[in-house]
Length: 257
Image (tube, rainbow, N blue to C red; front, side):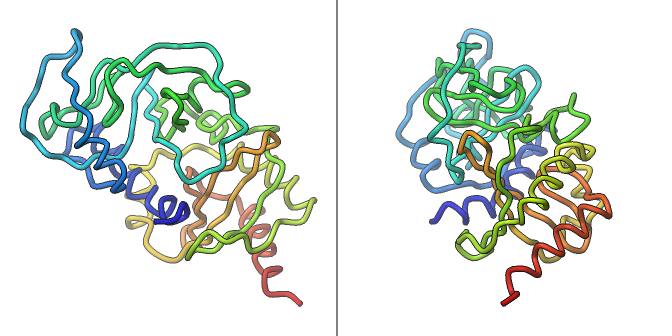
């Protein structure tokens, strides 16, 4: 499975985040994560009582810390990112132990082992990115966020915006320098819309999407989806009319001679 296929599943993963926060049974995720569940034997920490045993649930790779829910980032280039200060460690591993209906708590992870150390990512707010061991985790849900920048901490960091193929993630066309500057200014300022709210408002995000990638000045990347019918980005807000027009204009350049 290529990295972009993983990204196309992030919306399903976002559904999983909502389910875990509300106590419903979570959905399936990647095969390599399933194998991690099977090969790792751990038990509950002192701060959590064992809920269930011999329960099989296929989890997305999530962690929760200081009220923020994070997802493991496998599809993006994060090789230039570095660990900062240690902030804590995972207290409870839900796989194999949490009953269906268990609500994720601070210090929980779905697949990470108990004791996995959590670190800040240099150059980013702790609420946006964390390293769990050597794996980057990116925020997917922050109840305190008001803007997309509150969720992602990308203001002033975007260097390139490009369209990528919805089939395999192949780079199609970079935005023009002026369009990049406009997007980099406008996108982080959009109002943050939690996924469960957007999901209800957009009929489950039905319809076609454009796929984009933003590249930061440090070389790390993050993929985005833009839903054409609802003029909505994931993550995680509705485009202004000006930003909608900009995306459409840049999209036309893919086919220009």
